[in-house]
Each structure stands twice: as structure tokens, then as C-alpha cells.
Length: 156
Image (cartoon, one colour):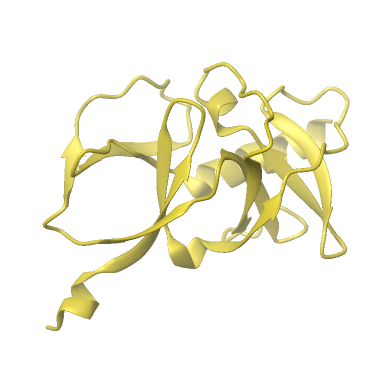
């Protein structure tokens, strides 16, 4: 098997005090942050909707989904647009707030190790934390996050 087949292009997505790591293929685009229209009655981690390519794009502060303080919006704040693979979000996409541009990395089994530390609740959209050289990014459970967004949008 070639080295290219053993590697996965991934993105390290900077949060306020953490990072997410996701396969590059999950991400449609990274866009400039603009204040979303807040849905009344929704949880604070669901920041609201942005108009993206003629679609309503629900935007999430991932920190809030794991019971951490919501991040401050700065000039570096962006929105990473994800494909809604489970198709539970009507637009087919959702966004996660990021504190800067994601970093493209190539990962393989030699650089990733499972880290048993957690720090999030059992209902959080996190699969695990991994150790990647000097980083300890979270692996988000994107389908669970999509379920959470869809549920909040129905209730709001």
C-alpha cells in the first residue's frame, strides 16, 4: 500500500482553548464571520443562521456544546462550513465558529494516538481526543452535532 493511501488530509480547527481535527472532505468552505440571526429560544451554542450561498446556514460555537464558555468574536473569527452528512439539517450544511484559519495537515497511524483524557459530558458531540505530535485535538461526533442542531432548530 502506498504512503498516500495511508494518509488522510485533515484540518486542525482552532477553537478558543482547544482544536478539532476533521477529515478535509467534511468541509465545504471557510467563510468570514458575520453576526448570525439568532433563533429565539435556542441554546446559546446555536448562534443563529447566516445566509451562505442562498441557504440558511446554522452556526454553532462548539465550545458551548461541551459546556465551555462561548468564545469572543474577533477579527480572526471565521466559520467552517461542514457538509451535513446525516441530512438532518435542512440546508444540507452547518457551520462551526473557529478562532482563525484551519490548518491543513496530513495524518497517519504513526502520528495519531488515542488520548484517554476527556473533559466533556457524555452527551457532548465528541468521539475522543487524540495525541498528534504536540497537539491534543478533539475528534467531533459530527452526526451527533447535526442531530443537536436539527433538534434545536425545530424547538426554536
